[in-house]
Image (cartoon, rainbow, N blue to C red; front, side, top):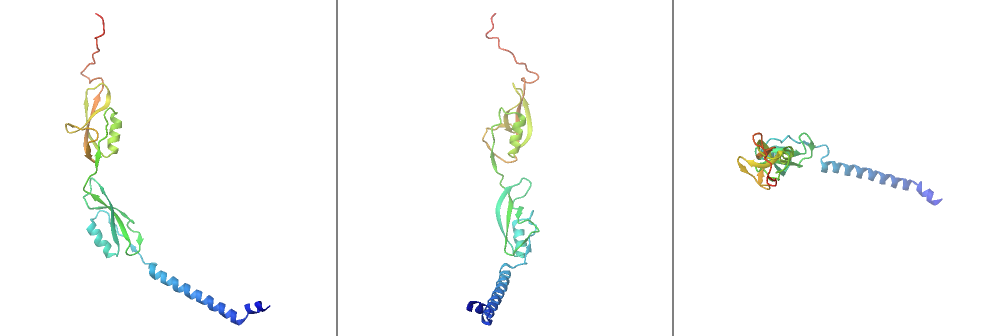
Length: 197
């Protein structure tokens, strides 16, 4: 009986009310401090940085209290070196101040690619393989041969290239391809060596 009497006494209820009041006040203070610390509701719009130089991007971002980091460079044939080609976060996104924008810029150094061995492969397969690697087929030279549409050699100009030769991506190549049946003006002559007189 004494315990129940204590639970409903004025002194106990007063202590409970004070404890609840303190919890509410502390919660409000902590939430306000968190809002200040995280700058809740304050954000900056990320500008569009594509197609401009790193120097220009640096000035624009500094004016908005943002930072940048170059994370990669890629070779793009039709882009001048140092131009921004990708950014994360993308333009228009809202971010906190002092956030970093990650940039990919164009490089002036084209990657070197090893020429695969496409000899004795069909023209269609060789062309597909070379183009998928970034080479450009600019000419097909047909020569007399036993098999039609089979690649015999790869050239730059008149120079025959060996498989494994390192070339710049986008290099224009000439494929030397067989006409088949030794061409229109040539005839395949059978051997008569083992025949009796």
